[in-house]
Each structure stands twice: as structure tokens, then as C-alpha cells.
Length: 102
Image 1: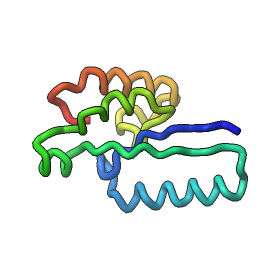
Image 2: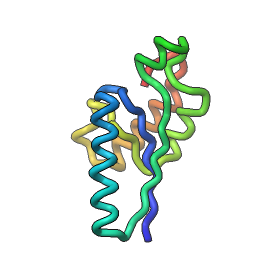
Image 3: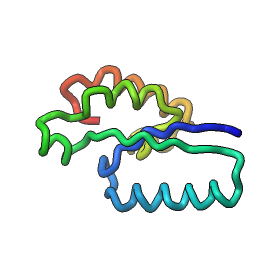
């Protein structure tokens, strides 16, 4: 069985409710088809997190995003790239994001 870890940043570019609905659909498909497992790693970041904490991303969020198989939502500027290239660019962004919002 294939296993995937998805770093999820709810509310970063899309609404939290859209993120929840997306993963509900993925879970329904997983149950119906089987063959893979999915672990969602929720990372707190973005504008609301900054407003509440004065930090752009939680302490280990950049590292966790870089280790994941994919990041959801994928940054708008990378949506038309193949997943592997987008992941490489997002990892680079995460590693160099000191003082910048994801």
C-alpha cells in the first residue's frame, strides 16, 4: 500500500472550509478504492496565524512542509508546474522563508 504525507496549510490562499471539503472527498475516494493511505500534517501559517501570533509559520512548519510528499494548497505560481518541480520550488521557498509568509 502506498503511503502519502500531505503538508496542509488551511486558509493559506483558500478557505479552511475548502481544505476540509477537499480532504473529505479524498478520504471518500480512498475508502472506495483503497490502495493508499494518507496522512495530513496540518501546518499553522498564513495571514490569520500571523495576525494571532506575530509569526508567519509555526516553529517547525517549514521543515515539515519540506519533508512532505506534497503541500496543499500548492502555491498559485506553481500550479501549472509538474508536481515534482513545484515541490522542489516550494521546499526551496520553505527553507528560505525567514521573515516571509508562505
